[in-house]
Each structure stands twice: as C-alpha cells, then as structure tokens.
Length: 461
Image (spheres, rainbow, N blue to C red):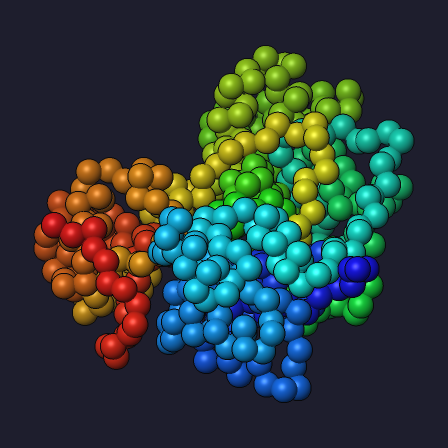
C-alpha cells in the first residue's frame, strides 16, 4: 500500500498548550491537525462533513471519559492513540487497547516524536520530507548563547506600531546588521537560511498541502502564559524553538527533550556583555576592552572574556544559565503578544548548550518578577487550590524548600489562600509566589464549584 503524504489528525487534549504543541508538531510533519479541548467538542468534530485519518485522545477529559470518545471514534472507523498522565501501567495500557480499541497507549510524559510516529502509522500516512537547510561555506563565529545581535534589530524591519501580524523577514549572511553602540559585533540571524521566520498565520489552520511552515503560530499570550508553554515542552519531552513576541520585543527559547538549552533576545540590555556588567563581572570600561578584542579577533563576547582571563569555562556556563533564566523569566508577566512553535532542532552545534529545568526556572522566576500587589490580585484570600490530577512535573523533580513543600501539602482544597497564609512560616510574598508558581506549573489548580468527573487526589496531611 502506498502511504498518503498527508493525514488529517484530531487531537483531543484538554491541556491547551500541550494540544497546540502537538498540533504544531503535526503541521511541521506536513499533516493537517485540529485540537479539541473537551470530549463533547471531539464528538462534535465527528460530524458527517468531517473526515479524520487518526486521533489522539487523552483519557482524562474535563467533561466525559476519554473511553467514550474512543468508542465513538471506533464506531466511525477512525483509529486512535490513547494518552494519559493519570492512568498508567500495563493494566490501563491493555484496557485502552483491548477494551476501548486504541491502536496504542502512551503514558505522560511521553516523547512527542514517538507519539507522532504512532499517529502516522495509525493513519497510514508518512510525513512530508523536509529538505535540510543549506550549510554556509564559512559559518560565522559564535558564542554559546544567541543574543539580540543574532536575532535582528526589530526597528529595521518592524516599526513599533503594535501590529504583531506584520511578518519578520530573515537576514541573509551577506546582509550587514548595524553595529551596536557598545561596540559588540553583530552576527547574522540564526535563522538566516529561512525565508521567513514569523509567518502571517493567525490560527492553527494547517498549511496548504505540500507546504511546510518553518514557524506555526501557536496563539495569543492573553490566552495562556509562558510557564504553561514551558510545561508543554517538558510534558512532551520535545525539542524545538518557542518564539515569544511582545510588541517590538522578540525572544526565542530553545529546547532539547523538554529542557531549556539556551535562549535569545533582541533587547540590548540582555546581551551577555551587558548582563555581566549588571552582575559586577565587568565594568563599562572593561566591557569596551572586551568588545574591542572580540571585534579584532572575530570572537563572541564570552569567548573574548575567556581569552582575556576574565572568566573560566565553569563561570561562563554559570553566567549563561543565569542569563537564560533572566531572559525567559522576564516573559512570565507578559499578558499580551504572540507565541509560535518550530520543531526545528538547533542548527548550531558549536554552541555550549545548557540544561535548565523549567520547573525550577518557574519557581525562581515568579518570585523574582511578580510584585506583591500582582500576587495579591492573582491569589485573593478566598481562592481554594487543589492538587492537579495529572501535573506535568513529579513532585520529586521540583526543588521545594521545607516551608514551600509544607505549603503544598496544606493546599489540598480544604483551605483558602487566607488559611494557607496563616499556616505557613513563609512571608506573604514568598507564600503567594510559591502558590502562583505551583499553579502555573500545573501542580495546583482552582476547580469550579460544579461537580466534575475528574479524580480527586491529595498530597495531603
């Protein structure tokens, strides 16, 4: 049998960010995909006018059982893959396949590429092959972190008009970028082989048959948050690039197997040299000397600092990790802008990749970036927080200090935020930041008053 080059896939997953990531991965493989966030919307998508080649179904949905969706898919002759973060082990895997008719079962966290392979096999489809990007004859010198010098000064291509739909065009290696005032040399865009890195796409609609977007627009940040997007990458153990755009500010986060390996920003103050000045590693006059040395020898800032004996390799890596945390953490308060996914693996093998765990980054970042006023608004006294049934992170993975772990244990749904503040030894700001971070991490959630079919669990005391 000859496999069709493209499949129509239905993704039934109530985690919006994870669903968007799966849809984007499917589009990146050349398939058409659509997300359904509830069981009812999945059943509505089985109307006679719509045809699906395969579906992915989370067994824990907010309204009906995933097994009911699997039964409906089977009745329509649509092969399905089942996933779950709660129902795990051989018993549930066998039940999903033997009783409910799923072609395969994957427990969360899963490797997204493996799940996509199974979906393609179930659909009888194959991904559209992607031609590898051309390799430059003389790759530019690079440092271990791509910063704004690599991305492009946005004023050159996108006026600060608030219009986030205008496309950003990549800069070729032959095009010169402006030299910043601080003397640090400019390098080509890391996406120099792409004709366009931010398309005008404004929805999750699939591309035209046979075309593959380098970036697919995931959505609007007003509907989600950056920590939840980090969670999705970690839960899917996925690699690729997450693009974040807020007005004229552009940041890109790079992942390998769900961990953050580096980040980029177009803000001058977030360059590595400027970051080192803020940390007291360099003075302004010393930075000028470093910039001159880097310019003379064709080096990046960090490499020049190594050669001048200002840093050793271990200290440089530590500073880079701190810089990445600052770049990413500064986006946690964004409530406007766009985000987009790319499944492209980082192409620059000469970069010293970091391994930043997103769970700890969120715990640290919320406490650093959220003001007490904002925390009080997000965590009013009457709120009740419950343990999430299927969190993206295991509790053993999070670095919670003793009082933070005790606060989490108290948050069993029986107590209000006001009660929790009275029980903890943490300051109000520390306690509210911990609760806010745990909610953003998907470890705690606020549940509606109406009864739900979700299983109730507790870390309780």
